[in-house]
Image (cartoon, rainbow, N blue to C red; front, side, top):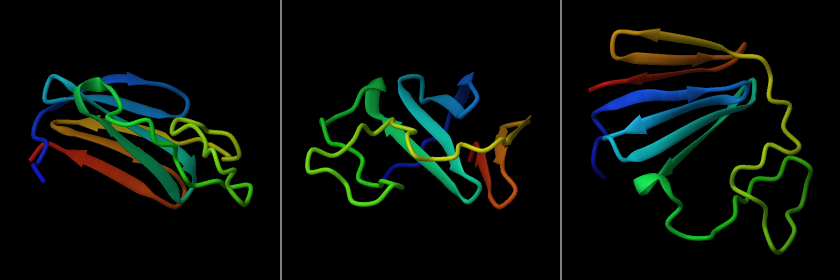
Length: 102
């Protein structure tokens, strides 16, 4: 596994942030619950395979799966964002994610 060294904030919305990584990849961090974030890395900005995401907050998952980007069933609480020199921070009441440039 390679360390991803350079990133910039590409966008921010009510559910999380998108980072542009190494100038060609995309990392999406969604705040799903106070103690649960979802991190997705899209190589060259696209999914490599058509897999579905297997975590379903409502119970058993349908055989066909669900969209990896679905927010359905999650509370998507309010969260705070902070940016500093070479850092980005997402914070909820229970969890904090700090993204740093190595």
